[in-house]
Image 1 (cartoon, one colour):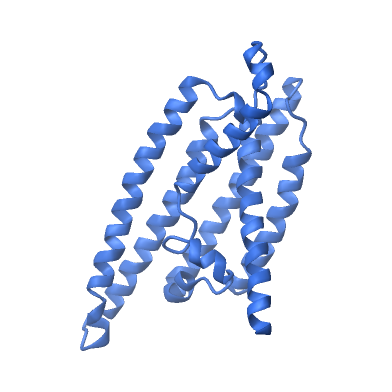
Image 2 (tube, rainbow, N blue to C red):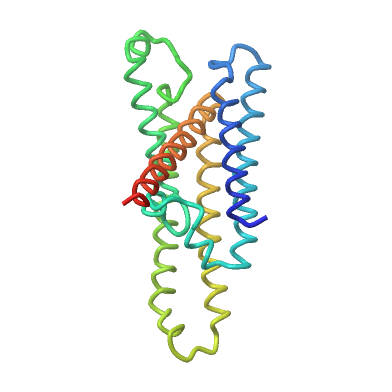
Length: 226
């Protein structure tokens, strides 16, 4: 199966898994509920890990095609960073969802009632999110600098170059670093959340993914009709 075909199958499976997340009981009332949420979160994270494992294999075979992401819409590619979503997007999602839920429950929270959702993040959780965001920004910038340096040296590919394979291998490593940062960021965010909050974060991230892809598909269809 081509990576394009794999992606479509993977994406369809992600939709079904998100439906399971959305149907999970929240807030969890029993230990069994807590265990069920943890299992669902683990299942989704394993699904994401499989995506990056297969993508890495595809990149080793043809990194230029993987970098170009022909399976994505034009809108998705316009928003991407080094062959995928920007890792710091995860923090924007956390802050946005937290703000929306906090505002919807503000009266209960002021009364001292705990909702346990993303609108009920503790000061310690906010601190850890902020620290992780700073670390992720530094790693993003470092990888961006690596790609910029690779691009500065790419003029060799247009002339006589005795190490084309070496340059392509370097591009593979840059893409793998970016993908590794993407996966590590999601894992670390999920780890600092409760199971209930983790489910809510993964649902929000997937729905954002689904929304952008839907808008992109509509845009591409309209563009083809012009």
